[in-house]
Length: 130
Image (cartoon, rainbow, N blue to C red):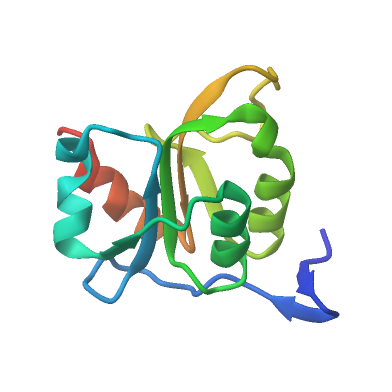
């Protein structure tokens, strides 16, 4: 690819490596707050209500991470490309890459998107039982 651009200016992720209080992340698509509680305790968690805005913000370095437990497959195509071109990282919450997953319009996915693989690993460890 040729990178991710906004108004002819190349943009990229924040490069954030660790989960800490100044990590700005989005949590969406879950009503089970107990699963996400470790993130609320360790990061600055928000939700602006738009998957496209969340991925665009992550791709341009505004946000550091995004977890969505019920993300629609048809909203992932362009988002995945934006994030990859910006140097970001996107997998299922379990850590499976999307590179070779077949596209099924009606599917929903538990996604974990982050500025770096290191940050994604910390988030995954925080919300999945060992």
